[in-house]
Amino acid sequence: MTIPKGDLARVINHMNEDHGDALVLYAQAFAKRKDVAAAKMIDLRENALVLELADGEHLSVALSSPVRSAQDAHQVLVHMVKQGRRLLAKAADEVAKGP
Image (tube, rainbow, N blue to C red; front, side):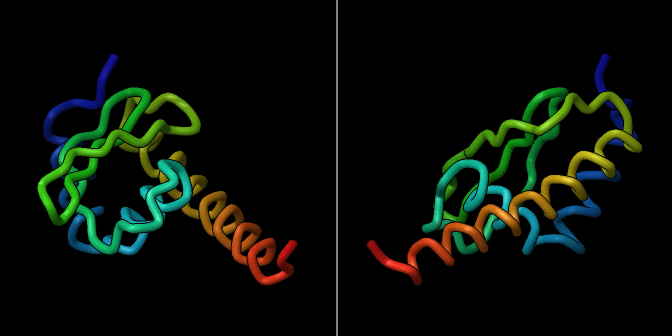
């Protein structure tokens, strides 16, 4: 089961208009793409979100849980922002500590 098209468009538009920073965080934390500085969500599937990067590259990022509704999308994407922030903070701490 997938998100109804109207809800899908609303989720994608909302993420692009209000949460560009989260889209970059998803790429950096979950796809290990520290080079990403801007991204646009172009699709949300049951198990992945698809981002378009500044150079036109499409990047698929696995979701932490399946998404079948707009409510699922909200819960999963918020959870992933929190998790992504922790992952990036942990990585930064490890770099700061050095070998």
